[in-house]
Image (cartoon, rainbow, N blue to C red; front, top):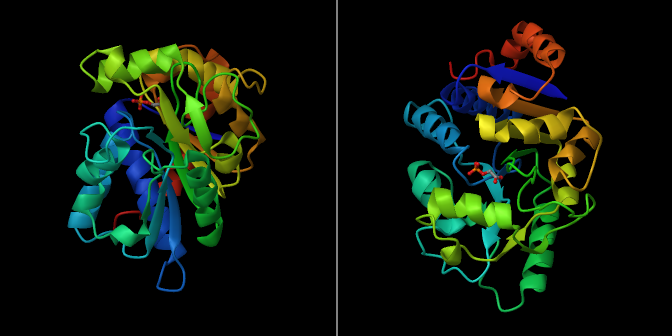
Length: 272
Ligand code: PGA
């Protein structure tokens, strides 16, 4: 595992965008070789999307040969609802870049057969050759995608009922603080689906996520803190701000800060 600790949430967005740009450029995607990217919604990745859009506008990165798979989508929320993840993704990212909409994949929370939709999604990921880089965030309760506490760490894409903490957090951020407006269920990739990706990159910002980060990396693997499943993955990159490290041991923070010169090489020449 690599942990990159930066001063502010803004620098987390910038660093993450540079890393994504470099991974795509180094991969040299083309018509016979698409780069497959797993994507999150939420407040945390917004900065990264803004920087990626900027690099695209500057001609430094193209998404022409990129396929995307989003992590999750609410059940029974109309696709054009301002808080649907379809809407979020087009509004905050896809409509500003050169991705072909046919290469965008987002679960359909309005499908008549939700289980069949989840199976179709898993098959689609396999058909695309698997995810090269899965990007995500974590919830304050340690969830990854909508894999709430107690989810199987071997889980695949399926219907999940959202935990009280998640309903509250999403109501505050996106639904006028009204928990009744937040859909109670979602379709989500499983922990197993994420662990199948060749690389996983997680963004964590703010003191409210610091306990979850501690549980994710400093304690054992537990289905009560599903992001801790990442300890079992061979290629994980966590990018956080100083506030998110508040619950980590001083020696953990010191160790990873000491590796910053090594980590900086990961984004060298990313946006030249
Ligand atoms: P946030 O959500 O980025 O809005 O904090 C992250 C998550 O719940 O996974």
